[in-house]
Image (cartoon, rainbow, N blue to C red; front, side, top):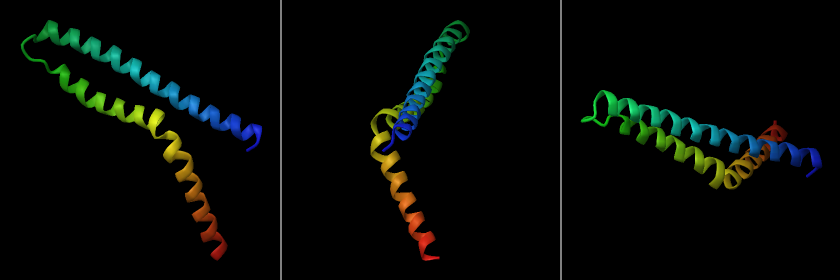
Length: 92
């Protein structure tokens, strides 16, 4: 792998990680604001927990994709799909 390919790959990984952190910060800030709004407007009905739960599910999915399964699936799967497409083109 050339230096420019390594740089490009590293840049993509860093962008994915930064995207996750932006998602995390948004989740914390918005859910904190919703919790405050919920407490002030209807303290007996904890509706903000539903938003936190479903958005949290998306956040966990984003975390897994970014930090756990990124190397295992993204590049290997992509490379094998490229090889299959090249083979199809050669057959034509």
